[in-house]
Length: 260
Image 1 (cartoon, one colour):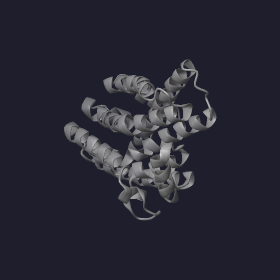
Image 2 (image 1 turned 120 degrees about the horizontal axis):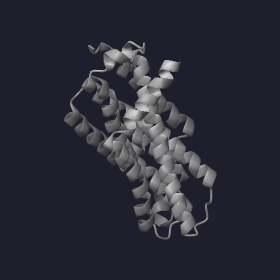
Image 3 (image 1 turned 60 degrees about the vertical axis):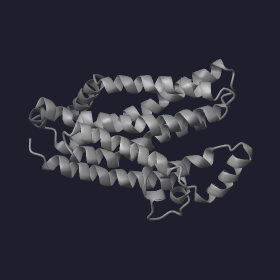
Image 4 (image 1 turned 180 degrees about the vertical axis):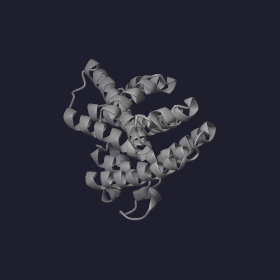
């Protein structure tokens, strides 16, 4: 247990030295500022929705996967994996610690965006209606985005040291998921073996959309039409966490098969 605790601290120290980690911190702060300017007459719910979702799907997703590539390849790049395995720490434990670091970063990233947008709302005298509920949605989105990144992380681990290919996969995966949530053919499907259920981002949006407050005839009409395809939190978390468990199993198999 002591060795795992030290390993976790070590992973965090390596993590903090990455330039992309600093970029992630800046992105979590700057994006809410732009969002506040665009939504000049918004209420607290709409401000948090914009930051929580766009910040997560457009910035957090690729950040998580690129950071995962750095974390998984750092021992191979520095030829330190043999030393770690002598502690002893198994490859499975090493994978779980790295994924735990990514989970903490994902939730912290979302909380930071929430804090900045809340501060903006206070400065603009916007009532903090539903504060606790919005905070819980933000934390939940951080966990879901962590799980949603796993299929792509599996590919990154499988391709090993191919950073250029990893980056290409990251942006293709991010773009594909984000574009799919605009498609009625994908989103308006019943729960089952289909893209609207199995693809992480469409599934997350099918859960989050029910907490929107539509304004105007167009949004209201869409909300009513789409409401029959909403999914519960238990369904959304269940599907993504099962997929995450399968991905972790695959990561362990791939990582164990690699020569030291």
